[in-house]
Amino acid sequence: MGIADIFTINRRVTTEAKVQERDSDETIAVISGASYTARGTKDAGYCGGSPQALQPKLHAVYMQLTRYIQQDEIKQNERKSQIKQEICGLESKAKNIESQITDEQEKLGHEENKIGKISSEIDNIKENPKIISGDSFAKASFWIGFVILVFLTIYLFVFYSSAAYSAFFKSFTPDDDNIAQAIFDAQAISKAWAGGFTELIFILAIPAVFLGLGFLIHKFSEEKGFSKYLKISSLVIVTFVFDFIIAYEIIDKIHEIMRQGSFDTTIPPMSIGMAFQKVNFWLIIFAGFVVYLIWGLVFSFTMSEYEKMDKVRYAIKNKEQKLSEYKIECKKIKEKISALQTEKSNNQGEIEKLRVQLGSYVLYFNDVREGINNYFSGWIVYLRSTASSHTNIQECEQIKEQFLSSLRNSEFIREDSN
Image (cartoon, rainbow, N blue to C red; front, side):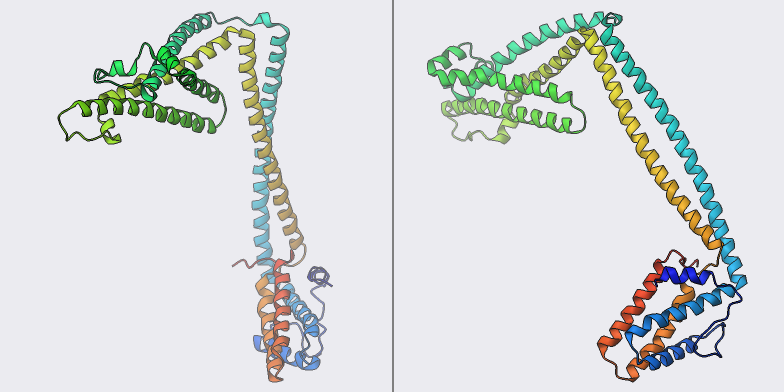
């Protein structure tokens, strides 16, 4: 028979019941710790301190203790008054939870109505596209952006093809001390062709790399979430490093020509620290890097205006974006309602548990722990007096601890109030 079964049977015992113990002179009373210890020693002596006999004896002590607590009307009334207060608090909490659930259900109904409405609007647009009025400014904005984009693309193609040729293939002369001449070579493509097909392909492909990076920035900006900013930042850093390499190569070649043509033997070779201090170095970077960023922004703006020109597609896209937001909000509300309902169920379970205790008697863990420990102390006294084995003592201690643990975890026994 388990702890719960014994406790349930105990609750049926009336306050008039008599305690039936081995010694007929023992009745329900406040038994001192010494009496329980003596009883433990005596009981252990009857059964030779057998671990198998210990648990039934602990049950008997537990039953005697609970009967005593059951008969203490003053203490029971105090404890039941506390339980009634707890029930009132839990019932108030239940009303508050129910009110929150009602509010969230109203919010959910409102969001679901918005989803239904906007879904209907999307279907209506698809069936009757003429109901959408176009954005007259979008067309003008698109063409303005398109023209700017064309010129920026030409500029970037010329700049990066010439700069790449100057940085990687051009042999500088003492006359190439002007930064503009160093960067821009009007015959870069023809010279690259003369240098070989691979050289030509390289300087023609360099501008495509930067234009491709700008296009990727536009595509990443359309994504959702924080990750898009990490991707865009990575592309910007990669582009800056590429521009840095090109600018450094050009500045280094110019500096080397000037150093070799100078009579001043103290001029050191170019270093990164020296490059940072030269205006021409930053001029090359900004002439390419900043224009590249501007190209990416203009491209995004132009594509956005192009979408607006397709008024039906643009209208549907905007409404689908709102629809997605409403669905996300509905999901959050449903999760909150589910959590509240779980809390409500747990709260109701606590109320029912307390009401069961009100119908019987209230028992705290401390009411039985001390008596059981005193009883077991007497049991141990006998075991040690008979030179019982350490293994036998450990087994008895384990049985006692498991018994107390079962009591503590029992739904019929409350944790100590104070």
